[in-house]
Amino acid sequence: MSTLLLNRTDVQQLLDVPKVLDLLEDAFRLYSSHKSIPSQRSNSSLPLEHASSMVVFPGLLPEIPAYTVKVHAKYPNKNPSIKGVIHLHDIYTGKLLSMMDSTYITAVRTGLAGALGTHTLAKKSAKKIAIIGCGVQGEMQLKSIQYLREIERVWIFDKNYEKANMFSKKIQNEIKVPIKISVSVQDAVRDADIIISATWSREPFIFLNMIKPGTHITTLGADELGKCEVSKEVVKASIFISDDKKLVAKSGAIQSLDLSENDIQAELGEVLMNPLLGRRNDEQITVFGAVGLAFQDLVSAWYVYQKAKQNNIGLIYNFMG
Image: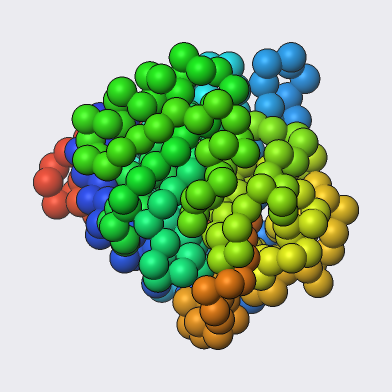
């Protein structure tokens, strides 16, 4: 029973980011229209001082004849902070079709999902962006949004100034817009049309009096119990859109703020099908709160697997031998 093994270099070579963006947009619609799909993540805390959690993602989606199981763990003080593998199985036989590194796929698909939520909910004229958290995902969010809209100015903030400085130097070589390192969150978000936050915070740091009418916020850091980046007053004053209502109410920003599923207006897939569920005017505040869903791994891994077979990339291994 042969299995295709793909390392990180293979995955980076094979994953066509604009193509996967189109696939993910279709997948969000499909996911929100098929409520029979089971919950797509399971977290367990790791009993270590500098580790966050171990996460198991079982990925299913109609129209893809495979399922994925991603196993990875989060180590905030390590680089990369997320490490793991994706197992891709034939849905009819259970055969292990492929094992591949999960780090790059996770970074890209999270970046693209966040950018899709940002672009869908931000007002059309929004071109000024604040990035809070200068890690891998802050970088991926900034790169990904450029596939969807023009950017004219960027403010960045990280509690670690050296990290922000390194981020600025690296990203400035890749995007040709002005980037300013801010001295505080408030300084970074003051004039921003779009705020994208990807941190490990367990306390809100984006408050209503910091932002102007019409602002859009994408919060990606609140992907586990107790993690939170935006305040309760921001959520209450906004149109809050999730990637999955039940999961965000149980383990995302809504849970962390002691709110309920009733505070979520819709899922991103529902807004993509019916834009009236999202922003309706330029004065509204919108928030996209995502925990990350395993179908995103499945869509990406299935694409990579097909491309690998077409191009004869990877190592064949027989686990049954």
